[in-house]
Length: 114
Image 1 (cartoon, helix red, strand yellow):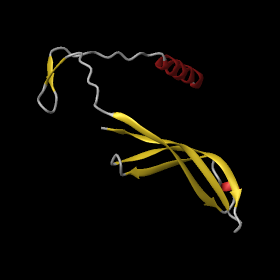
Image 2 (cartoon, helix red, strand yellow; image 1 turned 180 degrees about the vertical axis):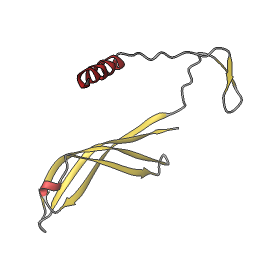
Image 3 (cartoon, one colour; image 1 turned 45 degrees about the vertical axis):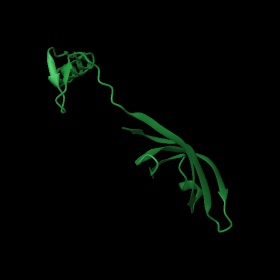
Image 4 (tube, helix red, strand yellow; image 1 turned 90 degrees about the vertical axis):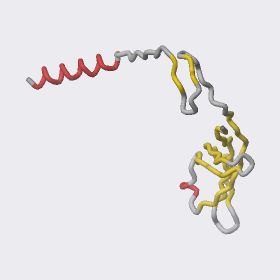
């Protein structure tokens, strides 16, 4: 009985992966939150753009084994009034005079600006 149950569940799982979801488009007129009338099928593109720039930072570590290959970094950019973030990759490691390790990370951070 257990073999039949396992076989049945396996078949159901395999068949569920092949299901396709279909979407339907509404017809008629809709209104947005501002009360403007929109025709169905109209694509609304938000008025936004992606702002990005290169960023290099350095961090100190006590042990070289604790230095990651990349870090997630975020900072507030006063020029655009938004937080910019992204992953920075490890560029180099230098041993400091005090015995700590200085890791330099570099990458591109950014955000969508509306």
